[in-house]
Length: 291
Figure 1 (cartoon, rainbow, N blue to C red):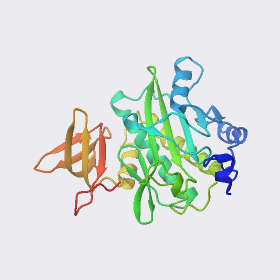
Figure 2 (tube, rainbow, N blue to C red):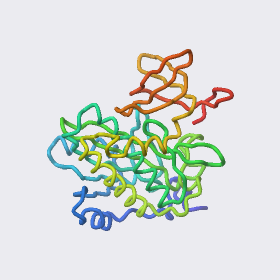
Figure 3 (tube, helix red, strand yellow):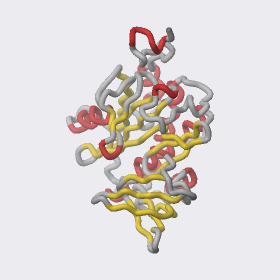
Figure 4 (cartoon, helix red, strand yellow):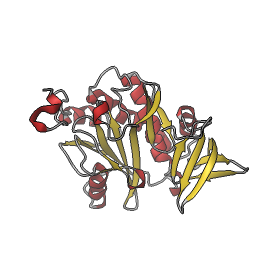
């Protein structure tokens, strides 16, 4: 009987050590930078919901980080759920206060988090990580593109934004929520230690967020637009965009505009910028789903 099967619980795993909250707090909050607090809890419904509630109640400020070893009601975009075995991944939220950034540029925040997370994962785990517009982190497993992480940015009150990230780290094939999902381990990561990975992702978020905030959210001046385009697996691909109101667009994703919207050269002519909806990568030959 393996440790994951002990006590009748396929998700128990003695080989998955807990994060050290005190060590993380000391490493990330004593630098005079963005982060003011790092809290690690054994389980919660949603780190985004908890941190947003704390911000609205005046109990948290910019730079607060909430990490959960397990999320029981984790959420993704479009009200999708996010579930994973305890201590098998990174599930955390960061409270930001980009009050001077124009509202129309706040759509860049999930893209910023994607650039930051992808670069940190590539450096720390030693695997290539690509971005699927607007908020997915992709890895390659057995030659196929798989989603290993997701990002959710939500407003909290008038001035705050909660940036949530969920990342599958050590899940094996039997633990994946859906067969098309992936994990860093399945993609060949050189380790499963979540501590250095979390530190790297949070530091990378700070390195991208502060210049972007100071540039009043200007994606060109901060270098964010160029960096996202360079790492985005969606650009240059045939896609199907499923939009609000049951509209669907099919065509080639050709660019990002200044507000972070995906510009699609629509089959039949014309271009349209998409700011909300679900985008599916299509195979060039058969136009079948590729995610």
